Image (cartoon, rainbow, N blue to C red):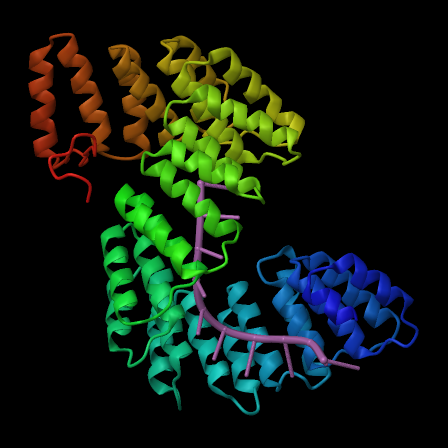
Length: 473
DNA sequence: ATAGGGTTAG
């Protein structure tokens, strides 16, 4: 019964039943631990483990591997070496299960010595243990070691290959990843998805889409992970036609739509310029979460529809969804693009009510807000009163505003600060020469162009899909 | 009856 509740993520019911249970054993405790792990509640796992020990139960292999997995990426991962010590005392460190969990744990805290030590102690190492070693080395950025382990493994399965590909991708070595991927004798939905999302993460959207077509031709059925990455690729290269095709394939494929996939659809339509399609799909979603709300608010903001962005924000609050820092970045940028100064100030000040501390991004939005509206002194004052060091984005917002309102003096101040933080940023040259051009100071403009040539500064490539002679790619 | 290695969103 408890396991049934756990499988359906009904932890409250599981908990109640567990409390009533008269003769608990290790298995019942492990089932509860696993439930807290599945519902991503590391603190509950921690408390449950402590309680279990307090009433005198001895952890077994199951207990330790669940607990270690639950501590990954949480504050409790400082306990990895303590759990390891515990495992040694119970002679469970030689278990394949505990061993591979511990390896992930050590990789998670960046401890290479621990990773190797645990691997050596595993009595009968199987493919999974070797795979965990490859992934562990990759996670630590040790690509040579990972490749060495892969080459030395007694046997390799599709997971070993996929781990290697994924490892190279995580280390931003997309070409190495692709060359390993090409050598695979068989591929499954995991391997295809890893490679496709790797291209997306590295902004190679066309490569991602090309590979997706290849995947379909090879007869491999995409899942919600794949589709979500592919939609991201469509959004990345602003290809509405491709995005629509992918959306249709999702509907035809019959993969159950989840929150993440739906949010990717919303985001794709918004980034491909069809904000109404984004909105109507968003409206049709039965379960809107924080990320989906942020996505539609950001979509309206980017389309300059400030009022509609703010309406969605208010609706989100009414729905009882708590905004986070990203929500406010989107809300403030909506105000900036819509010239809604008073509203921007109101929302900026309301952040404390939601216990969200304004970060450097929010300050950048405010500088942008004042700057676009021509209130340059106010923007400058805002920068001076910031509780942290302004970054390139903050100064860039001011510089952009100076370009918009042809203010050379303040523009030069911003430009100098940007150059200190990031040498030879092309935007600095373009913006200053733009202002000088407007002031008809042609000698300065020419001087700047010469300077750019000398310093080998290249203007950033920019293009627009609006009335593009190439049509929609 | 409970456990380990590879993939997704703002």
